[in-house]
Image 1: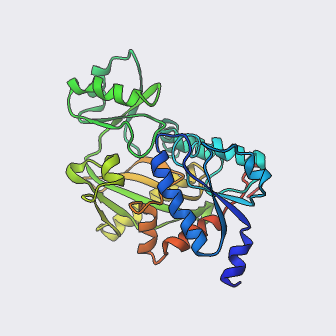
Image 2: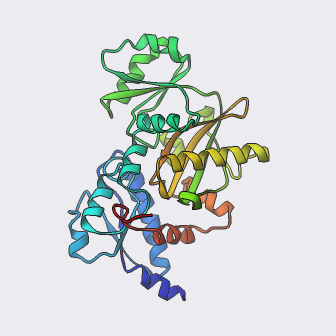
Length: 318
């Protein structure tokens, strides 16, 4: 099949980006990159912001498939996936249930634990709970974060009892309950996954070295001081173990298409699963394109590969 014929085979494509989540700004950057890549390859692609247009326009205007470049709520949590199922528009990435579970860090951890996968100890904390007792159970430092946000929004590393309340209030701006998580001292890693079921495969491991270990929103997307080592300088057996547990984490949630798994590697080289992103970033600072490049896959080729896997999931069988 020629490049022109392949591009034409995708039909009219909507690139969904923007949206209403706290990650709107990053989604616009991701979606703009995806849209440009599709247009470079001759795909009939169009920008579509669900915050500014009704989803039913997709059906009325004859779109054949959708590339989801939304991040966070109303885009990565199963809601837009459900809308696309109802509209009959095939879409990229995971289905309704996998997206919803993966967006909830607490439910994600519960699923991983039932599969015997390693994740740091945690508690779900509500307003009025005895915050000062958490360090006695989870140790210090510990992490407080909203269970339904990404991009490190609302996340705090708490070093002492006196910091607990402020960290809770920050996370509680985004969620009714807050996830308190054991801090794993070690190296920060991330692994991109492509495919589905037995065909799911991990791309090279990336190690993230942020200034003072603070991989926050600024350092993730806008700063230039964070170092990314790809492939991560790990012994072969450790890298293989990290990639294997990442694929297991992906399959346990029934993810498909693509995703990115975030982990910590402790001082004994044991991996600990933190979370999974089912609509990964595609900005110039994003990690999935970086891992793809390390395997010889260009940004444009990655975008096409993800789009080629777009489908309806409910009632579609295997």
